Length: 335
Image (cartoon, rainbow, N blue to C red; front, side, top):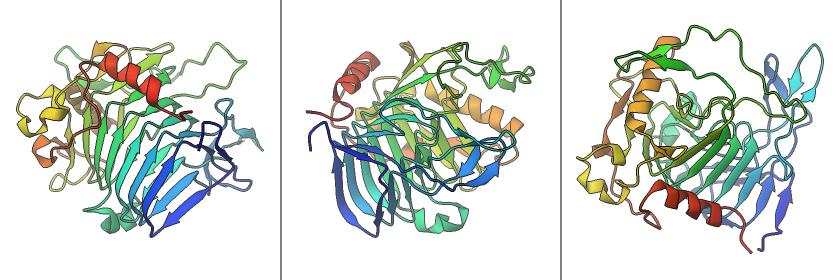
């Protein structure tokens, strides 16, 4: 297909399939006319994903554009008593023992809950030991959360660009000894000065959930807005409550001992062009999460690069600027 291919209002469902290739299309998920309300004022359980994998293996999604619309973020519809209706579900959700999936050179844009990879608690036994993902060369643009959200599987997140507008205060500040502390002044959030356009709050990029193993390397984080240097929303967590079976994290550029991961040892990730130690960042954010939430405990997340097998990426890069240039040129539909 050429760069004009567009599936608008389409939901592609793959159930117990294998050997899938989806390339060079733009896809927008259907609007759910009758979503179920969950939480006031704008949390809704909508039904239709743009693409859904259920027990589907050996798939390659490359050079696609996933977005609510071609014109930007779609504001929720006004409803009754202050409710606002969000009519979109996920862009690409995967569950129930799907495996061996490569997600490369895609643009994920202008959406709220983009990529949910891993089923719920009750279905976790179907995913454990499967759910292997490689995420390379993608451009996340104003994707407000789930870039991706990861449960139960093994995920290599390398050489991607995450671009967002940081308009909320940082989640926490830093004490003099580097221990993360909850902020005390979170009662009032800043609003966007430009009321003529819809610009909702960015939430987080990478969700590390129960029993997931996540490797990150050479990613470029680009932020504008009131808090462009806020690094407290790169990660979020949930249900990391079993130190005997913790979630595992590895950022090879931050370590000199991961000799079997040499191909992933560079470049270091950056935030607005400045080096970013993601190992320190993830554990600062997790320490905050343990203090502020009740679903995770100390020891529920560990640094363990030995748990990951060596894996070559399609290209190698000298620095994160090369990653940025590569992704801007190659992500999305091509002529």
